[in-house]
Image (cartoon, helix red, strand yellow):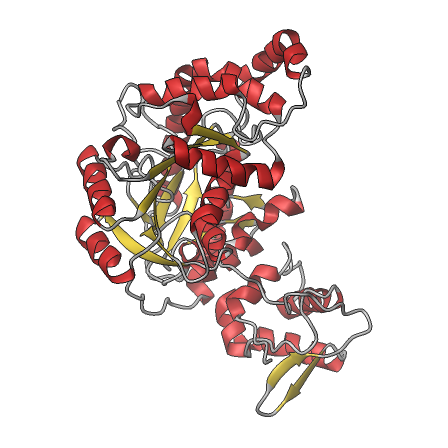
Length: 491
């Protein structure tokens, strides 16, 4: 089998700070040598052409030529006419089971989470510090709930009943009547989506998603053999005319949407549009999965439209996913799925097979916090609005050519970089020690290759330093970087 490495896959494997302080080609050669020696690049893998890798890295072609020459001289690479440049067999090379090839565009978005903190300011994920109320809730659990929690085995695949009761009240207050038996508690919204995909998807299935969409969904759905089809948005959400065409043409198993608020654009789907989306899904017999985990507000007092599940007519199937990550803390790994009770019972069986149930103490803390959720969300909204004003002020002053729309909510700005390839800019930004998510991770079709997602959840001093580094990276790219190629239609 001929293993050829795409240039953008290769740059995702490069470590932080690979450029170093000396000549760029030496830093690149050393980074590639390390990937070979550690087995990240398997023997026989064909590397990208010098021109292709130079474009992906936003460096000169001569930089890549010199790096390849150095590695050929050291015996790490070998080149033959007609077969390109390949990884040579090395004593220290350990063959990877995946052939040295990355499997998904979105994997790099979360890679730094596993690497731990470093000098790079990672803006790959929009996460805030934990709410102070967590400490009080934990004390209450220790003093009032722990004896009861320890009286049984601690396995609750559906979730603690006390938590499901309070979640049912919370969802009912949002306009979605819910019983405790219609809820399955999960280890975060990420697991909720994964379990839902496991229950519904088979190899060859199709999932219709918004375009752009949350980067992690592409890897989750493809892990179960499904493909994704993107439908563009307008100011109210997913466009009904294009959705109807996609449902008719592709006959998908699932429709995955983020109505409050969309990630990465921060748009709020209108009530009229929610009703229309559900009507189309019912007509085409498609299960709707709505992800409300990104629903961080930046205003207070405004009422959100009811979840899509509130508009499901007889025979319609809507699963509603949520979590406490944005309103409380990402480290409190508590999410949930709300569905019709027979569907929830099926999902609970998948949850039992996955891990027997989420941690009981975490669930008890969440149950203590839920009655205070409205207050916590107001506090988060006030903080988010201040940080958003700070970030947009910095960008307007330092990077006035960048373009964005004011988000309705969420945690990030969706920024268009005029005349630039966002993946190339992301590589230059990494050399300036700041990580951003390029639009290709949110839309593999290439329709948003000129966009980046920039969270405003960080403290003001971090945002100030990040913009300072991004400004230097932008100046560097404008001097040396490539122009973007033509965009590919989404549908």
